[in-house]
Length: 358
Image 1 (cartoon, rainbow, N blue to C red):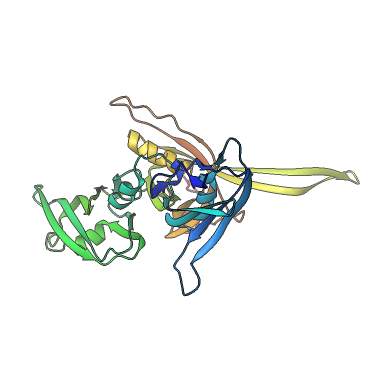
Image 2: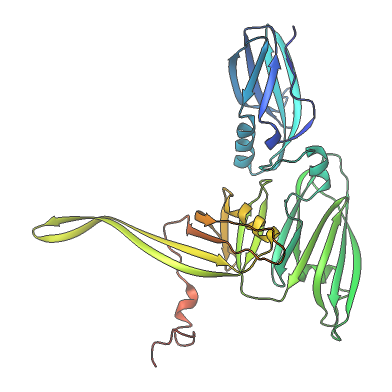
């Protein structure tokens, strides 16, 4: 019996699909390798070994588990979404190879090949963002794609209150791999200046790239907190939240008595922030829950992203019509050096409820 892979029947997979790999052989031992397939150069085949091990075979069949964990760790470390891999099985001097295109995905989808070329790399394609907010849409382009067509269809309000629509098309030359589209009201108005010359208000935009579609709705500018995170496809994503914040500082230390005097040592200060969101739709709550379970989360302050740790959260989401959802979560800065609020020194005599003198 020749060595062969019996569980790999496709060329494109989400990592969440690759829970196991099954190999058949009449050999008592099989050697299994995973390679990252890079670009060949001369005598170099471009392969980098990621994993190898030997396994015992029973009843001419061997199943390897935790394949997804190996691939997702590699993709996370390299901050990429899609990679080419080669699985190799060696037994009785014979070799079987299987080349795969793997897309990082923490959630389960049926058809990876269709999804990664026909969808934006996000689980939520309808977003509500502030008028001054910016959102990055990530999409994957396969090798050999010379250009893509990007269509923007906007809905806007004129000064007399009437609603209108407009449309424009751009042609872009993408790079192989992940490509990025930066969406903001400012950018849209610049790209479509024909429609926005007299103070028109942008309400929404529908973005189409091939079969990929996304809907962005703009709300009047308001105070929001901006969080970035790596989503289910290992791509940077953004959420805009209106929250009530409570800041909590705790101190832990060891106390010793010396010469009738108590002293503290091993002093550790912890500052955490508890956020309670305003009312959210089910889709908004699901997106924030995806952020809360991400390995990388950052808060954006003054245009700078500060990594944070989600230390506690409560997510209970209802699908009842007419009922909103409120989420609570607690976080700390990843750095133990606390950031000073630079506005504190300028607003001491002007901020409501904080007047030092009556």
